[in-house]
Length: 107
Image (tube, rainbow, N blue to C red):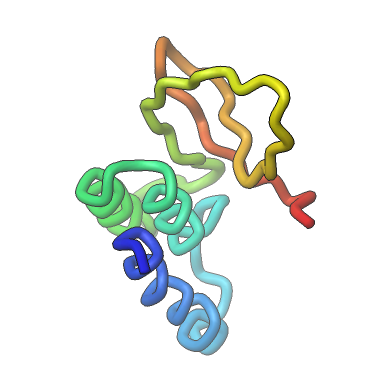
């Protein structure tokens, strides 16, 4: 099991067992737990942890909330002739920085 999969396990545990008992309290879309999973899967583990903690700290009445997708820095190499399973869409933001949006049409 990779480190990234190991780190997403506690977040998924929270999503399935603890979050339903607490109710819908997140002020952001995607939720803070989903944001953390996306960050862990697409970013360096330490950076993802840091960004996720900052996001959780912003999730209170002092901040407006709203739509806040993760932004990651990536180098994209084109792949031709291969069938790909798309899990995330990367929307260009700046040079080598992309906004992550989950592809919900997974099969």
